[in-house]
Length: 94
Image (cartoon, rainbow, N blue to C red; front, side):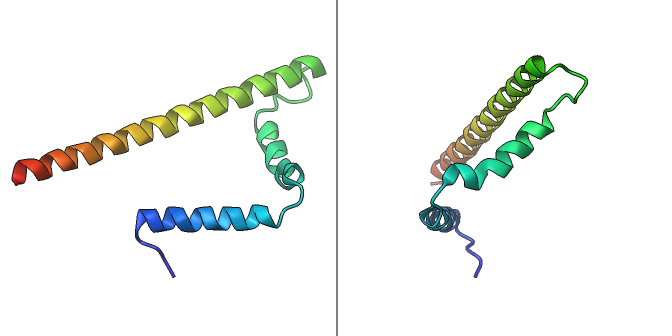
């Protein structure tokens, strides 16, 4: 059963997420593998001494999160601009 309506897809996604978290007693444990994989993605390798290595990984992860947040914001802004342009075109045609 595919939902074609964006609002319905969003609602189904929220429902699935809430259902999953309702059955998960330890959220931190449930997401630990994903956090470890993200940190591994930015690991400079064993050649870097440990205190510096941890700082580099943390900085890279934080920079990645900022880039993702900016991309999400830009996509949302573009979407809103497209909606506004469509509304303006619809009013002009009336």
